Image (tube, rainbow, N blue to C red; front, side):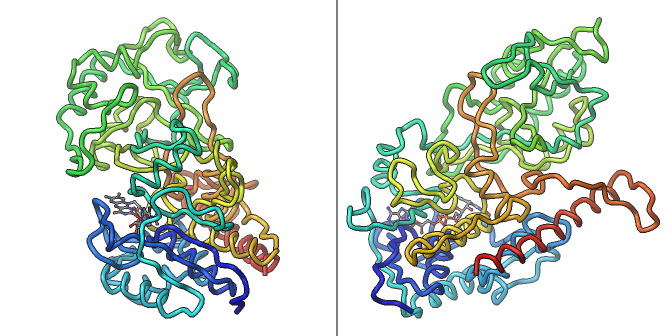
Length: 466
Ligand SMILES: Cc1cc2nc3c(=O)[nH]c(=O)nc-3n(C[C@H](O)[C@H](O)[C@H](O)COP(=O)(O)OP(=O)(O)OC[C@H]3O[C@@H](n4cnc5c(N)ncnc54)[C@H](O)[C@@H]3O)c2cc1C
């Protein structure tokens, strides 16, 4: 414990800020946590608790062998996460998921922070840039960052680099796309600034398939905007179902236009419409469905998108959405230690960095808290390996995502942790009898191997970092 050190300041006592405060204090560094509730409300929070869960009470799958968020749970537990400790203590029955009694959970997090001698909680809004004498700051103000702070951040980053809505197109695991039906080609074979001329995966629809697809979009169940979200449609990011409602041919003239592309599997037949997927991460394991932001319910998305030729067995790393969400264009404006390049005393954590979800937000808070504490103690924290869930998530935020391969709009969008963010294995898992595996059996074996590699690599990293 070292009260002589000047404190790290954290703005926002949500999932990320609470975890960051805990990690910094357990490293012996004092923390001042500035949380604006109850002095100032957000549109979604209802209590005064730190780490309030604003919607579902689930931390998703707790299966650390075959589910990436389960791996992240395991890693956070190994790093003495306050969020995981309180979640485990306030668990409610939910099958294979980790769900919590929301008030018991948030009250426990708040009490642990209040009781820690190195943590001071100030109930106040930071309504602009932090004072100049705060030399080590974590901004963890979340998807509903107060307008005054958001404005100040936007002025530092440039307005174009701070978004107020996400527009999420689904992302597909490359190895689940049927390349006997789909093919690689850029429109008119254009290479663009960062491409090769064959950068997109194309999936062709004939007239009958297109008509059925449009009907499914129009008739499918949708999520509704919350009152405070208003209707954030703006040019270039209309949901596909809204485009379909504007006219049955609209999509064929928009994101599904079939021009400049020739199907090598069937070169003489012209497709009625073509869905394009663009590489999403540097590893080449994930592809996003270009222009396919949508408010269809998740089940309807899976069902409808699997009618697209080539995507019949698609596995989705992320499904589409459109929400009120404040987040940075992190790959551009943050460095590898999540510091703002324009002003490195400011670090960012949680959903505002472009991760998605309670667990991911807390995980980024955990690692950023450790980075801030190490800096205050004059130590170097080596980054977690990309083969771990936490390292894979950080890599997505700060560098693994491909910004754009052509002159399109910025494409960085929030992401849950998933195995597609992990570097692929350098071997093919075999059955115990040495035979090659296929289908679901092979997929499960790969996940188990990725999880085992993550566990081993985290252990080595923790030993080297301590
Ligand atoms: C409506 C909604 C529903 C969601 N539902 C889910 C869900 O069901 N499951 C899921 O996994 N994820 C969900 N999310 C996404 C996300 O995971 C959560 O929002 C998560 O709480 C983000 O963690 P965070 O710490 O980044 O932000 P938050 O938990 O929101 O914490 C940010 C904190 O900063 C405070 N704050 C903001 N501005 C200031 C300021 N200027 N000064 C001081 N304090 C400030 C806020 O009061 C808040 O307490 C949802 C998001 C929203 C907006």
